[in-house]
Image (cartoon, rainbow, N blue to C red; front, side):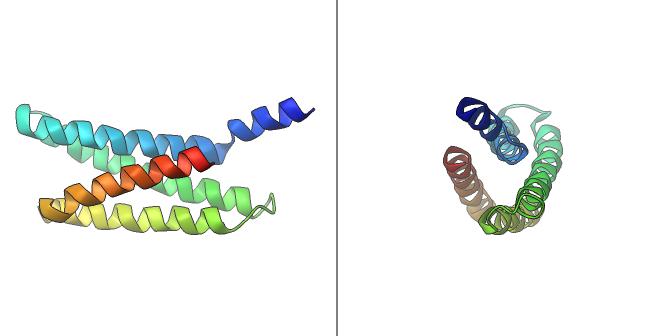
Length: 120
């Protein structure tokens, strides 16, 4: 019984949402590198920004669903909301072409997302 509970916890919707967000942020770093070397890099980075933002919204949804019906802690909701705010700032900085803040914020977001994934 304990093994089944651990397996269900390991692959929860919240954990999958955090993993997806982490992956999309990593792919944004890859597409940022392509901005410098390939003609299609800008298109990939632009599409990736939308996907990353959607993954951040999915993380908020998963956190709310884990909290409200399941009676779980509210902390993941606040963390997911914080990521959505960071993603919003990141998109605005990208559109405004402010790489001096956009790049370090992307690195910070990846690190925080990876930390959230490992802790979950």
